[in-house]
Amino acid sequence: MAVQDTQPLISHLIELRKRLLNCIITVLIIFLVLIYFSNDIYHFIALPLIKQLPIGGNMIATNVTSPFLTPIKLTVIVSIFISIPMILYQIWAFIAPALYRHERKLIMPLLLFSTFLFYLGIAFAYFIILPLAFSFFSKTVPKDVTIATDITNYLDFVMTIFMAFGIAFEIPIAIVLLCWSGITTPENLKNKRSYILIGTFIVGMLLTPPDIFSQTLLAIPMYCLFEVGLFFSYYYITKKKY
View 1: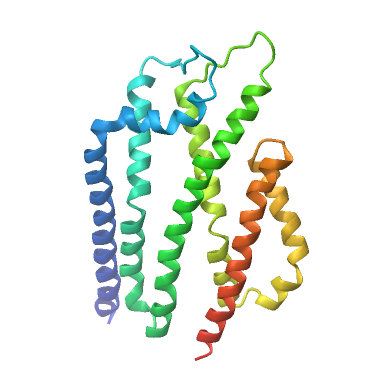
View 2: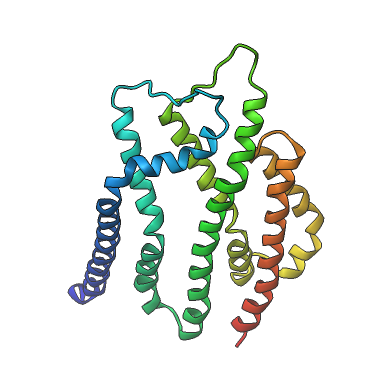
């Protein structure tokens, strides 16, 4: 009996190893394709800051190995970001057999939509927030101070912003899951709209430069995403009953 009990566990571990290997191989293949363009990728990521530098201004490398390792590090991160659809598919393929048919029909769209929202959050940060932030910072530089940002510090800062906005844009998914799991209800969230609106402005204040324009630019999309999640939560709860 003990041997029979361990068989499902072993098969699950084998399946998990297969899915993890598929994820690693996908990231590795994309990395090998992109490694030749690592410097170009870094230049693209650095453009929001470069455009705000004074004439003749440049970024710097304070570490001997930074000019080589930093673009490589960025390429690894980009490879993971690009691989997210495959990674989510592998997660889906691993958990799908344990789900009921109606659960699979509901969760699959959530996985696809969450991927889209994550990329949308990164794009929003790159094209909207970073140019605004660096424009603000460049205009508040004290007199006789030259902007010369270290390439490694810049990468860490930008990746933090990307992750923050990518996760922030997952609000609709979080709302749907909270309502679907019974932790809260759409009616309860609807009654707390005013508090949630204030919360989005607080988050905007923490994630953007200290000016009301940038804060509003983040708060409004976040609140709109909350409303989107609230709308779809009604649909998922209705489907759950059948």
